[in-house]
Each structure stands twice: as C-alpha cells, then as structure tokens.
Length: 476
Image (cartoon, rainbow, N blue to C red; front, side):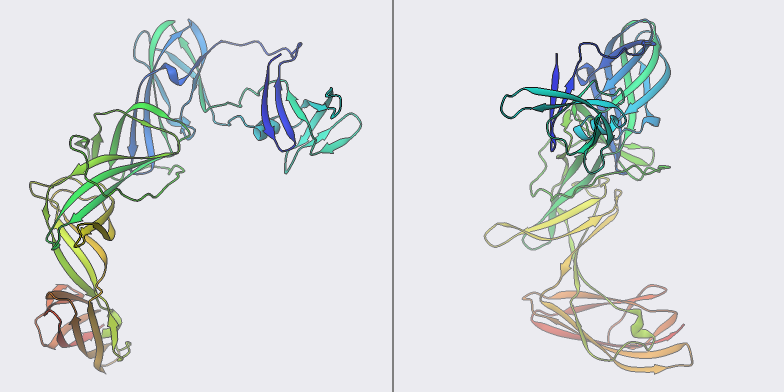
C-alpha cells in the first residue's frame, strides 16, 4: 500500500491505492510522459509587452502509432492556442489533439474534484491508536468540508481523508498533453508557445562628474519570471519595442531598484534590428528561476557631455484674465540633457528608468534623482528631470490685466528670479499662451517656440537676482 500525505486544517489528506481499485477505462493509445530532463535546449525571447516566446527541444523515443504525449513543466501561463509541436528529426508527426492542464494538485483542489464522490475518513483512537475507517460522500468544500456519512452529515471532520486516485486533469506541474501519430523511434521535437508571466525592462545608472558637465551610463536588464516554471540553462533574447497584440495576457510586475555599478566588460548582449524593433541576444546562457527577479548587463559607456537646465512652466490662465494678481513663489525643475550619439553612446536605448548619482566631497556616490525614458533611437536627445532647485526661487505676479472685448485680454507680468548658489545659473521660463497673441513689450527678448508657447532665457548671477517684465496681448 502506497500513501501520500498532505497537511490540512481538519487533519491530514491521504492518497491510498486500495487492494481492489475500480477498473479504469481502457486506454485508446499509448502514453508517454516527458519531463524537463528531456530538454536538450531552451530558448526564451521576452518582449516589452509582458509576454515571452518559449522554444524548447526534447529528445524522446516515440512508439509507433498514436501516442498521448504529456509534456510536463511547461509554463503555467502558457497560451495553449499558440503552442506548436514540430519534429526536427525523423519522420513528421501528426497532431490530433492537445490539452493544457494547469489545474495543479493541492489539498483544496483534490477535495474540490471529489465533490459528489466517496472518500474514506480515517480516525485514530487517542488511547489505543487503532484506526477506524468510514466511507463518506463529499458534499461541499466551500469554507470547510461537508461530508455525508451513512447516518449523519459532519463538517470540520478531524482525522485523515483517503482518496482512491488523483483525477486525470489534476497535475502536480503544468502539463501540455498532445495526441500525436508518429513513425516511432528516437526523435527531436521542438515545442514553441507564447506565455504570460515573464517581463523585462531596462534600468540605467548615470554617474555625473563633480561639476555636472558629463556622465557615464550603464544599463541593466531587469527580468521577472512569474510563469510558474523554471527555465534552466536557456538562451535568452529580448525584444525592445511595442509589438501589437490582439489580446493582452495577464501579467505580474515587480519594481526593483537599479544597481549603482558599471556593467562588466564583455557581458553586454549583441544588438540587431528586427523589422521595426531591436533584438538583444545574450551569448552566455542563464537560468530563469520561477518567482525570481534577475539583472543582466545591457551596456556601459564612457563620458558623455551633459547640458543642465532650470525650467519653470507657466500657466495659460495667466493670460486670459482669470489669474490672481497676487505674488507667488515657485521652484524651477532641474534637468540634465545629453545626446544619444558620439563614439561613447550612439545606441538604441530600450525604455526604462534612469537613476542619476553624483559624488559628494568625500567621494561617496549620492542619489540625486531619477526619470523614465521611452524607447530612444540613436541620435535622439535624452532629457532627465531630477527634481526641483533648492537655491533658485522664482517669484511672479500679474501687475496689470485689461480685458479686450469678450474674448481678449492684455496682461503685464513681473518675474523675479533669485539665485542663492555660489555659481551663476540660467533659468528658462516657458509660457503657454492660448489663442492669437503677441508680446507688446518685454525687458528681454523672447523666443516663439510654437504657436502657443513663448520662452525666455534669464541669466541670474551667483548670489543675485534678475527681474523680467513683459506685457502680452491675447485673443481667443
């Protein structure tokens, strides 16, 4: 007699092979079970859309004729409609049917499958240790077990529950069952399918030099595997870009912090263009364990020139006569900007978060902000918002407002920018202006960035202040 026990709040659950089991239905074809040990190679391509393409090759000895092949340890989030099984050696195989069994064995699942069926309840006498057995029918498993005995109904039954067998559609691991017809003999089969539960993103670390004039950039790929399966010693590829899909898979995400270190030389993947996307291939195989977050090197650059900017965005309400004339103080946002070109960069950068560090006087790295970039092609400008300036203050007020008809106004503005730093700064004021507009007068020249945007570059001396005054007429 073989037994298998599970812990359960009402006691123990026991799998039991009885001396005279109920006769099973005759098998219509031979059965063959394939485990992960049969894999000869595995390749996983993970996409930005939080899904992956899995390709695995298994070497099997197939019987001649029809066989039900159970491919165990596939992804628990497999999309079965995307599965494809191909013979890479020997005669082609004919596929008749496939079933994806992802209902995994557990005490609760086993009880649920036995609703309406008989089990054996085993109670042990506390003094003699003798086991007493009774047959019972499982009536329900919602919020506890309800059992019907020959003369009563009980809930929360103490003791052990014994079952005749495991239901055919209840697996200990995710399993793809396929019915095929084969010529027989040793063959190499390739199984490919799409799965959810796998994602990747890029994480970058930018290290600014002491004066903020240049930075070095290192990139890391952060992989998350929640597919329900471990892929050992696999070839890994990543696709950067937005691949259109008719249906979004369910996904699990996890946020981790980037690493403040440089990518090791030689560890970066090989990059190539794949239609309108970019494909990254790692030469070194890796293991993607289930419920694991893994980081792999993506890129590492030498010094890249950086431009710094202080930017304050205005409000369109200031030019329609609806804004208050009271003085208000603001802090401009601080940005660093660099070009994705040159000998040290000039690479397609997948979307991700860039975390920026700089060194203090003692030489220690300090975190100074982070921002997200979208997929960035070679030659594009990368602009990162780090936060708000502590020592630069902008105080602005509307000094005059005259309405012109029902849909027009002329407004005057006074802007004072104060700089408490020991170095001079340049602040960019960007003003969104609705409708038709023109600058009537200004103490400094402006730039018309677009049909509804004017901007001023204001130089502010160290430990000093600069005043900008201007009047704008609008019609909307």
